[in-house]
Image 1 (cartoon, rainbow, N blue to C red):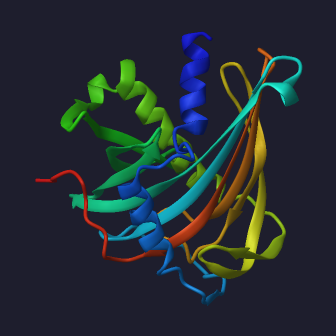
Image 2 (cartoon, rainbow, N blue to C red):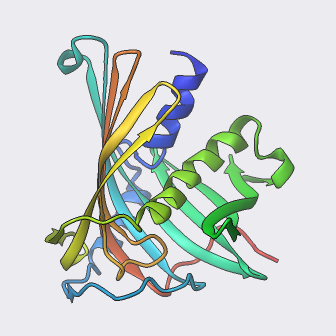
Length: 250
């Protein structure tokens, strides 16, 4: 398996985790799920601006199939990712991801700024923080195009692209999610070209969801190397406060 494939796999499966969670992590997830909201969410008119303290939690599932006979050599992983607006720095925000993967927790934080380029909204990652064996490493904007920093930046950019794609139209449907019943969820098809193939599927948008207005997504990546990756995510819970950041922001 070459490096380019590993990078793409990280982009699409980095937010997924193995089913075997540590007892401590499993307790955290169960405690969060015990507070799941059972409200009925109407579609908001406008997506609100990011605010420090907002958070959302998604459970994820991934099926990876390789080779011509994909049904016979597939693997499945399950896990979750929590997203938090951890701090503000001027007009920019620190976005923090807590990812459960391979029985471990990983934290990544990105300082994100909005830009208007030719009248179009764009996002720029100005700085990155990654925890590695309890050590924190920081990367400046000039260092983001190398090694692990490049891979983690690409992962966050996938979510930022979800926001940009939310302007697209699609039919409205009701959806029962772990976070509750959502009314008038917008179902939007998406197709993106990648280095080794194409990603396609659907994203379900609802403006009651903080940070990223994503209530659910189902994405499939088909590559020229006879590899297929199917990833899904569903909103488990969300809020405006109550979650502590992993990194310090000064």
